[in-house]
Length: 413
Image 1: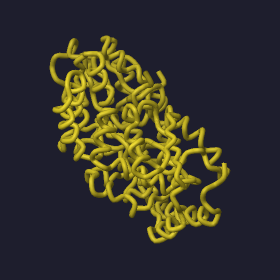
Image 2: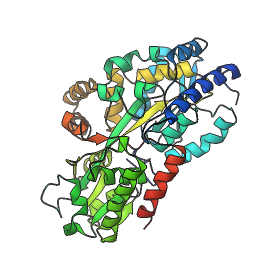
Image 3: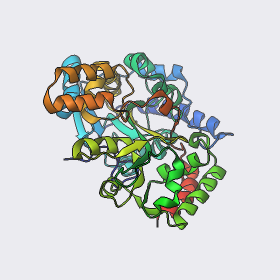
Image 4: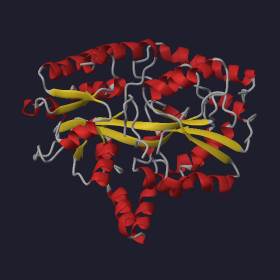
C-alpha cells in the first residue's frame, strides 16, 4: 500500500562507526571497481553490483555479533504484537529495537544520506528499502554492505527462485526481499461490469474522465512502456520518450481524471474513478476491511512487481545480527506469521500451507481472515502472472534525472 510518497505502499498507521576505516575503504574500493565496469556499455536498467566474494568473505571474518540490533521499517508493516521479533530474541539472545521511521523512500534517503556521507552510524543496523531509484542510488554510492552469502541458508533453501534472481540485485549482493506487491489495474464493478483484461482499457474513451493513473513516475512510466511492449528492466532513454508520448496522448485526450497518490483507492471505491492503476495490497485490504468488491488484474500485456528489501546500511554496528535477522524471516513458520500479519506477497512458498493450517484451526473472524490470506491471488500470484510482471527501471545519477525529466511533466497536471 502506498501513501503520498513515491514508494509508500504499506498499510498506513491505525554515533561511532562499527567498521574500521580500512575495512570501509576496502569495500568501497571494490564497489567502485564494479561501478566503473558496469558504467562501460551498460544499458540503462543494468544495476551495479560487482563485488568480489573473496574480499567480502575476508571483510565478514572480522565482524562479530553485538547482542543488540536496530531495525528501521515502515509503519504497520510487521505481524501484530511483533511475535516474529520476540521469538528471534528468545532464540538468539539478540535484543531488537524496532522503529517505524520510514515514511517514503526518498525522504528516508534524504534523512540518512548526510550521516552516510560523513562516515557515521545512522542509528540503524538493518532497514527496508524498495527496489527502484533509491535502491539504485544506495548501490551506486556504495552505501550498502555486501551481504555474507554464507549466512543466508534459509533464504537459499526456502525463497522461491524468482525472488532469488532479481534483475535489480543479481546474486543477492546487497538485499533479500521483505515483502512484495503488484501494480496492475483495478476497477469498480458497480460501473464496469465487463472484466478488464488489457492495459488498453486505461486508454479506452468509454471511461474518459474516470481513469485513475499514478503520480509516481516509476509506476506510470512502467505502464507506458508495458503498453508499447517494452520491458522496463531493459529500457533505454529512447524507450522512455516513446512511453511518454503515449502517456501524453492519454492525458491530452481527457481520459485521465487525476494522477493519484494513495487517495486513488478512495476515488475508486467512491466512484470518482471507475478504473485505475492500483496496488494489489491496497485492493486486498480495502475489500477485506470495508466490504467492497473491487476487482484487480494483471493485464495481459503485463504489470509491475515491486519488492521491499532488507538491506544493511554502511557503518552498521551489528551487521552480523542484521544478517541473522534477515535469514530468520525465511523460516517458513516466521514467514507465515509475517504474511498473516501484513497480507503482502512473501518470497517463501512454504508459508502458504502453514497459513492454511492456522486458518483451519482458528474460529470466527480470525478463520475468515487467515483463509482469505491463504487463498487470495493478490497474495499468491500464479506463475502465469509472475511471467507478466516487471521490475522498475533501475537507474541512478544522471539517468535517473533524465527519466524524471521525461515523465514528471506528464503527471504534474
